[in-house]
Length: 275
Image 1: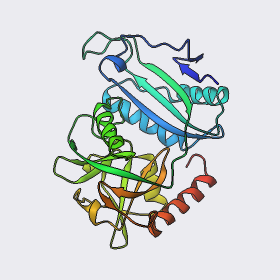
Image 2 (image 1 turned 45 degrees about the vertical axis):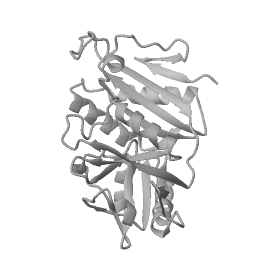
Image 3 (image 1 turned 180 degrees about the horizontal axis):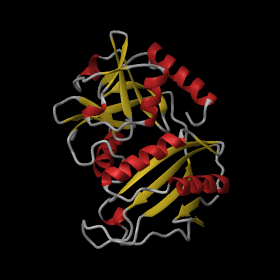
Image 4 (image 1 turned 90 degrees about the vertical axis):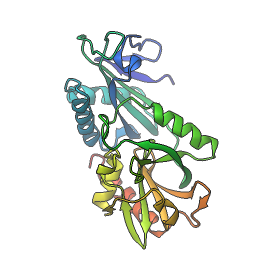
């Protein structure tokens, strides 16, 4: 089945959906995006994702996106390309612009696309990387298309048999993964880095905080080695246990706190598709 794509107001197939080589999202990474989980044709937590898309666009100085149009695009793509479990990607860029950092006047580009995705295993391995997240950067807290350092870090993770790489920030505090937030259990208590660490305000992170409860705590990156349990949260992972951090094994993953967090998340998410 060829994927359906919504591009600037109309439904296209994969062969006819084309973006200009002068699009600012392509030339300089001037864009924002959201990844939304789709199950049996239904997007999960779409309203929260659209609110974050608008916040990221404002933070990058892009025109306010027409969220009604984005919703229409999501509906059309999901209707045209039904999959049991999918990754719905909304990309919103600076549009056709000069070859440089200056933004053009043609207006933004909006793309919505859907691909079928594999469900994550119950537990995974992660590594830590020597590069730091800048908690004071211009893009901090924005979900932009400038993902070069994530590509590098994730490639290193794969080289070490892991599916995610975790970053500290410039002061050595635990921050986030390339596409995940991280939670740790210390002395039986659940903790996650605060947004001031430089991590993205993840949608699944927020739901876990609301539904399960956790302390937002500044922690050193080394806390991963002393943790009783570690888990990741993201749109397509939901709550995923970590069984290895670098060369340190966490036996019995998922542990009891992680298992309970996952149970609550699954139960609450099933009761409300747009919490």
